[in-house]
Image (cartoon, rainbow, N blue to C red; front, top):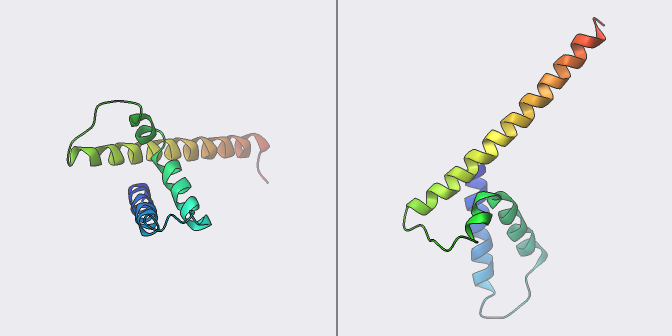
Length: 97
């Protein structure tokens, strides 16, 4: 899901930018929002790759999108697991209702 949202927002953002490229018009609120969404979804791995001078050629570049999505998935899974554990502990300490 993250991979599709990240890649889709990047493509739509790029397409919207190219539509107004020749006119020189300012970016609309929707275009700025799409760009911001794309930047958030690309964090952390793709954002950090901007500072590394090595470019990853061809289809290997898509592995970065996959790895970034994997990082997001693991982080979200850990957060959900921690919340569930905390709720279970609260239920256990509060006793039967």
